[in-house]
Length: 453
Image (cartoon, helix red, strand yellow):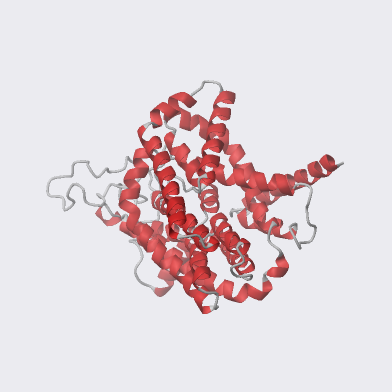
């Protein structure tokens, strides 16, 4: 009987997700907000709480996050990741300053104390890799020039969690300096070891995983990813970081084959993750904290947009790509809930749980919308104010695309562009495609055409 109820509940969930996805596709927007609201309606305190399938949905949600990060990792090579992180670390520092400090200030203003301030700083700092990975795929932006900048910030945040989570755990538990330092050293060592193996022995790993049989390839890649993610999480390192590093360790035909095989699984379990998030939110706990959570959400949405805009501008991305980068980073999600959950379990602040839930729910719903509409809204405001903007015709699609101009390509005699200079839209030769409004010094995801619009 229990299995029958489980099949009915889970089947209804999957069918409902399919119908919501079809509805969102008809109106050309991300289905993530609908998935979350559906989970809220059928979770604890909702219209029709589900019970029999709750445990399975929880496991599926965790697998969904892992697959989202694995698929992102498959888009990039290990050497590209390392070189890009070296150039983007200032963006990580700006990200921390602009987004962690408002959370800490809010906790102090609410009178929650310094430990709660450190916790809430993490809640507002970390964007949702799972939500953003899904949004990038839904909007077809994996090949955009600003996507490597977004990815670099997400990876820096995920890697920072290897340092932050042990510190939080030590603060909440009240352990001594020696125990906290040991936990931190283990976390950093594991993250560094996995990254080293991915960079140094990626080809060997690809050979080990490679198979002409799709079934064997799927089983080996999925098993390896779950194994590494589990070990990483057991050692206080994010499972998402472990899955991402497995993805970048794979290359060539193995990466392409794994991407094709795992895409349907990713879509299924990612949808389950967003439903699970809503299922574990009690609607009755939100109203008392909704106003301060909304105020903090507005502030940190703006600071995330500023972070993405600054990082993309620093990388030489065009104006439209800067706004897209900023809008895409707004969503918070899985890490924020994990961090707040640690504080609630330790009894630091009873209101931390509902506050963090309301805050994340606001931004996880708004995030896909800002990713879609920040750039066109910014362009409309610029036109309304009657100034600035890009030169006429910059938005027009080219009649025939040409190969991008690489930085190392020779330049014409007498050209004002020296080799190694960033190539902005205004610097392109007259016959260059107008749609290429960014320099060609960033990463392009593996197997994806470069694009900016």
